[in-house]
Amino acid sequence: RLAYCGFDVTIWLRSEDSKTRTQPKIDTLKKTYEEALKLMASDEGKIDSNWCRGLADRDDFDVDKCLEKVEVAYNSIKLEVDMAKAVEDADLVIESMAENEKDKIEFYKKLAPVLPEKTVVVTNSSTLLPSMFAKYTGRGEMYLSLHFANNIWKQNTAEVMAHDGTDKKYFDEIIEFANEIRMVALPVNKEKNGYLLNSMLVPFLLSAFDLMADGVSDPESID
Image 1 (cartoon, rainbow, N blue to C red):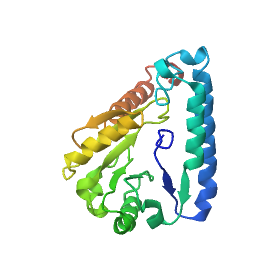
Image 2 (cartoon, one colour; image 1 turned 90 degrees about the horizontal axis):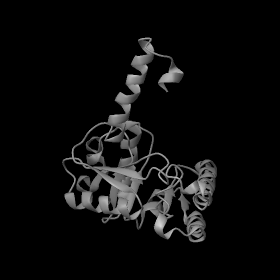
Image 3 (cartoon, rainbow, N blue to C red; image 1 turned 180 degrees about the horizontal axis):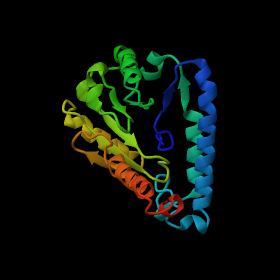
């Protein structure tokens, strides 16, 4: 999404082997964007459920220009295994590791010494709180959460959550940044496990389990 919106993007990977696993994912995402845009250019694509708000607005949609943006983005993304090189001129670092507290802490300990002074750091965690990791970043006032929804080309929401030590200046900057990359920025003004979306989704799912466990209906009907 960042590359599609014209930002320079470097993805840091743990090893050269990781590149062989990451590149196919980028290839698949490119194809997904292209197929979505071509669908949007058809009559069927103009239906609300098929329109990808994260890719274009209806009133000035130009499929050829958007496809060109996809191509430029695809060719501009850099893969880097040297952490210092990956972040040497970064304005923003987005950490999107699996939800493992220990692994995230180790990552931040390695990242902190090589970060430029200007760099803001965010976590894409969907459950863990930024206050759990702030002290390991070496810049707690410039650290917060930026959690993307799934399939952000279509479900273009981003939750922005600070911790008590986050400078509001950077909270506001990340809100603005989320809007710049065609996301609907959702401010989360107080730390909460699950943020907004998962805090509402989990009770919904548990209600479905309760209905099934109590024999109220069958799984297919509940679904």
